[in-house]
Image 1 (tube, rainbow, N blue to C red):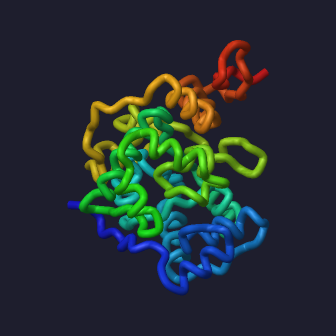
Image 2 (cartoon, rainbow, N blue to C red):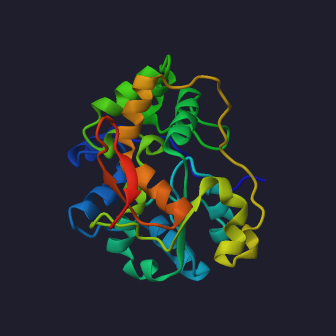
Length: 261
């Protein structure tokens, strides 16, 4: 049985005007924007209750979109959790970052393709694309349209959560991964053992998008490697346990994650 999810009607009417004043498309992004300005946002009752659920669980999971997080949140917290970044938690509830923490890290290209399929179909029966992006995403004819959307974005706030880099959620203000464990997406079956939480041993699937044979061209792949450059470093760290730094490799347009030091 799917967890009870909040409606994703998006930002309309007065809320759209308010969001625009803060330079975001989604009104739910205003707290994130304020945190990145160094301002502690006011939290409504729903946000405070989500924070209380995390405290009660004694385990912080950073829910990166398109990384199988809905079922994890349901098991850990008994509710849907917003896609909040570590920088948000550092500002509104810094004690949460003292808890054991983890996140799943997915291959950036495979995650993009999953997000592309999800965007073009409007989401799933459990969760839909937010209204400010829904019409444009439904009109994507191919991967090139999604890449154009990313290329035109001035900031992560200009795209829906599903297309934002994983690093946007996981890196602190100093550019360091701020969770204890980065777990490769393919090792989702190991989460229970690695976190010591038996309720995470087996997880149902929600919000899975349909598979597609469409693959990026070499030029598109090159763009994705550059756009999600920091995500490849996080992926490297999740797989090897070695903190990675991005260094340009001579003769390559895209940077390749290399061990630091």
